[in-house]
Image (cartoon, rainbow, N blue to C red; front, side, top):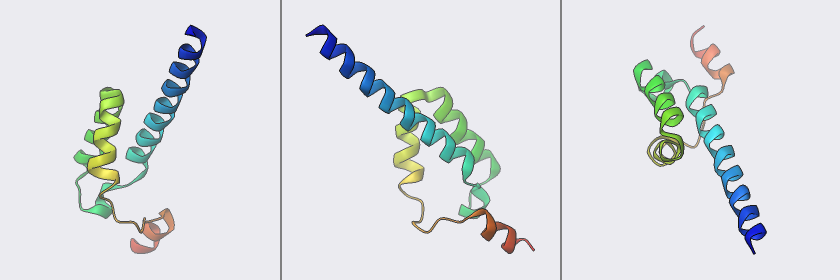
Length: 83
């Protein structure tokens, strides 16, 4: 019985770690100038996700990621916009 619980614990922690890395990558990836935020907000969100660990990733997901427009801006769009 304890092996099953330990396996489930490892599975859940692995999934949460992958989700945390995904949210950290997302916070780094999107330039906030394209969404009307300042550069301070970008680094603040990165720090919240990094140091907030699991709580920070859920805060970022529900506050920023879910509220972002569905049409995401690519790097090529940013380059075209600034030329």
